[in-house]
Image 1 (cartoon, helix red, strand yellow):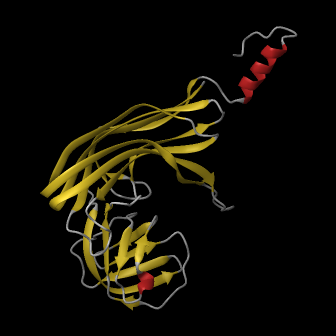
Image 2 (image 1 turned 135 degrees about the vertical axis):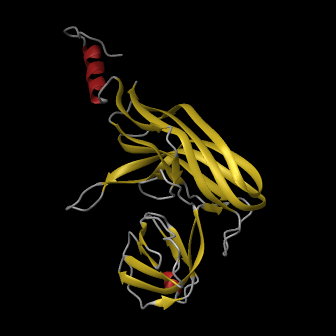
Image 3 (image 1 turned 135 degrees about the horizontal axis):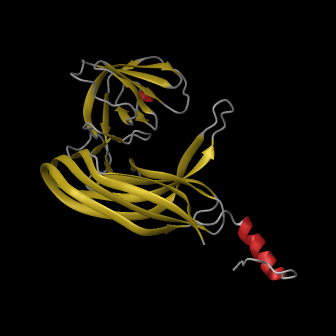
Length: 298
């Protein structure tokens, strides 16, 4: 344990003091982040903010038949609906799925950028990577869902999150979180739903763009988890399921981290083959929710 003042000639005390200084800044809560609100927020399903909306947002859009599928450039894809929709069916940022186009090159999951623009007649999607441009095609369907198969790893981020910096080997992160969630679903027939809530840790790194450098984040571990199993019938709500995490301690290496409260919905009776099953989670209505992350040096 370092001490003050250091007496002349006390080599051990001097060594301890220097090591303490090199281990990073001291103090309680020198690095604190978080978010908390009681205002209703509807989960959007986006991979990027906004993670919630104050107006109702859907987590399921049934298959929409496609007319023409085409590439506008190496990263931009336009899918025209076979017939116009009454209202734009998709929201910006949603990760949608395309299947059964005549040219299967167009099939797949479009994430993490997903929907860039949606009208009643077409949707434009963006991908992070670039692809070879191919001729337009026809047929197939496009849809959006958030109820995954039983072995899926997909989690949906909430607005309860915070970023902190670890500056020394003795730093610890103390975490707490709460989520009250009203889960709406349709067409269950003795369906087994597994609802999972996690605090996940993402690690930040600077991208390679010299013109517009910014932090990107990749998954770095699960810090806390609670799992709930339900057997559901018909359509309805799981009313106000509450999850509370307290006294969670994490000890990551030096770096910049993003802690996010995330949820996952699994249909334990679905093998993942298309078409989608009738049972789907359609909405998550959050009430009280929050996450706090506080860095403390031992």
